[in-house]
Image 1 (cartoon, one colour):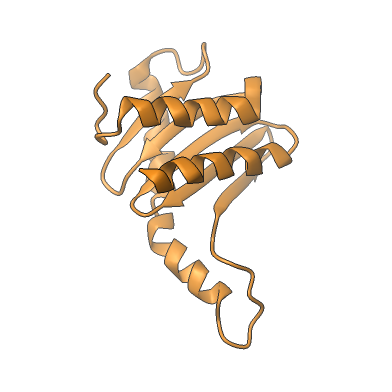
Image 2 (cartoon, rainbow, N blue to C red):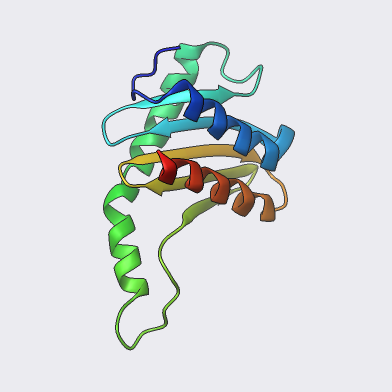
Length: 138
C-alpha cells in the first residue's frame, strides 16, 4: 500500500497493532499525519462506508490536531519554567467527548491520532506510550 505521508508499511502495521492491543474493539480509527498530509491506517469495519467518506470525515479532525505541532514545544517549555512545577515534557492529548475519545500523539513532525468508544482511560496511556516509542524509532 502506498501512503501519502511516505509512511513505511512496517511502521503502519506496528502503529495499528499497538493501538489494537491496548484498545481492542473500542478502537474506531487510526490516522497518521504530518504537517502536510495524512493517511487513515485503520478504521473499524462498517464505519464511514467508503474510504473517501472516511477521509472526508477525518480531514477536519486532522487539520485541527495539526495545531499540536506548534503547541508541543510551548507546552514542554512551560512545563520546565524556572521556579515552576516541573511536570515533564508533553506526551499526548486525550479529548473527551460524550460518546468517545480522540487521542493525539506527536513526535517531531509526525503524529498519530486515534478515536475510540467510551472506555477506561488507562488503556490510552498504554497505546500512546507504545506509539510514541514507534514514532521515536522512525
